[in-house]
Length: 293
Image (tube, rainbow, N blue to C red; front, side, top):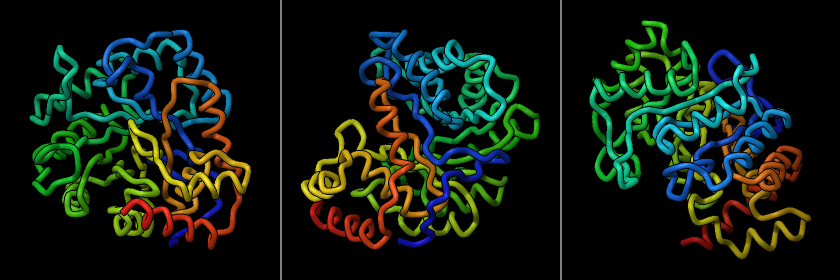
């Protein structure tokens, strides 16, 4: 599988984090828009994650908008010293809940200040540039020099500690690195969606974190008879096995599965304890990918 490891932690910027973190996107309302139906449950999930040892939370001020950051602040402020909150800029929301690109320098500057305000921070630990090219749904080529330079300037001003990219191509990663160091790349990747295999390995060689979004398939969960059967055989849920595969895939992979329910949070975190033979996980990965074609 390449660069495999049973390590429980990896570096993110200048901190060490547990390899299973928490993605806050699902804490907002339907379509990642508006407030959750049960704000108390959302706060309980965040507090439960920290109590269980999570020290890496992924968010964005355009989730809601503002909702997930406000919930994080209400649940966790003042933040634990070891907590790494990673946010992203590059999008906004229309009044109808639509996703609107916000890629101009002024938009990115505004986005950073929005995150600082909503999270009640003086400096953001990690900010990812969400790259939007073409349809914006998948990585597409296009220069990001102006956009990333804008964030690098905010970093020099002391508003951001570390920079990363989201929805980026390998060439955009190289372009960004010519401007300022990056500490993570956050792209769509899971057992079925494997286009980034070469990028995962390249980043591992550079000791840069790779953070899959939609690690369990996205808004429609991974569907696989092979995965279901293998999980049942080992007394696991299919989603636990999918997460275990990602952890075994490469030592630089950090996971941010999201959920609005404590029981799902605990199920996801338990994947870190799964210790299956690398050869078996590799076979599952190959079989599930063939099944999906």
